[in-house]
Amino acid sequence: MCVPRGFSLVEVLIATAVLAATALGLAQLLVMSVRVNHASRVTTLAAILARQKIEQLGSMSAGELTVSPPGSLATDTAGWFELLDQSGRVLETERGAMFVRRWSIVPIRVPGTVVLQVAVVPLPVARSRSRQPGESRVVAIRRLLPA
Image 1 (cartoon, rainbow, N blue to C red):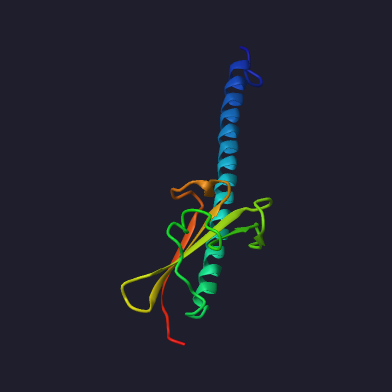
Image 2 (image 1 turned 90 degrees about the vertical axis):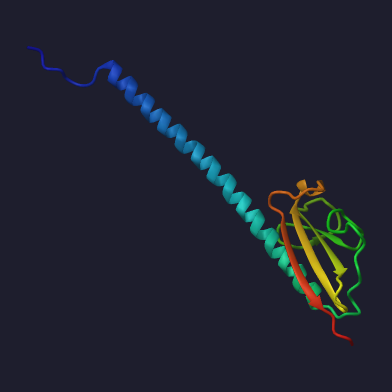
């Protein structure tokens, strides 16, 4: 009677196929987790930059706040947008810019009250008029006190 020693070629091939399929699944999971982590980082930075601008606008006096032109939240309107790098520094040109930050100041029916809106969108998708992944918007209502 012959006692089998070791594994047959078929068993080795099946084990190798199972190992390869598992490794491929793990590699896809790793790639997806890196993408999600990057998207989360960009969204968090956008939210921080939007909040910083809303706080800046909220601290301005009534005389410093002027009504924004229509569409200033959707397009790059002079005086109503900033290009920002990954550290939040304002840039003069698009070179090195990671975000575009736009804001608007709109009066509402309540006398002496305005709506402050800030949108921060990652570049290059910021050139689209629709809402984009990674975009962060902050809205605040502010009562203007007479000076």
